[in-house]
Length: 138
Image (cartoon, rainbow, N blue to C red; front, side, top):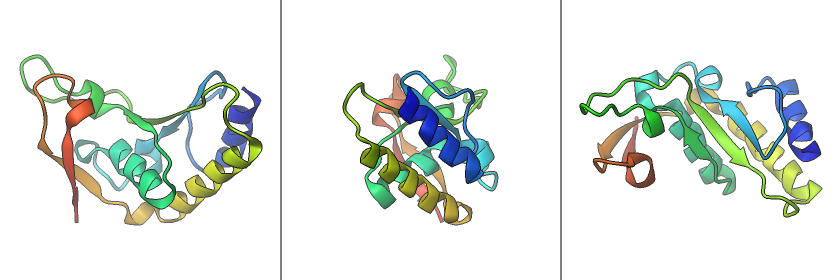
């Protein structure tokens, strides 16, 4: 829990919007607030998540409109929030891992205005967040 609090403090100091209070097993970044130039329908949490992976190999998960936006009738409605969850397994990460994660998040934050939105090019009829294929909107 202390590692998550430590990382949260570093992100708050850098102006990266997170869900507070920090603690538990994960840290949640508010992708809509961090990437206001990306419209909700262009999936800002996916943009942030992809950037984290491309810049530093960091894998998070989108908790937002791809996961919860598809309605039973096939229409799509934005989720209440678009978050990126960074989960911390117990007794696995050292302080160096957490510092590396902070370094990558700060690097992505510096280029946040250049991150693209995304569009869905294929999705399964159920549980699309596991199999969706997207492309950047350039």
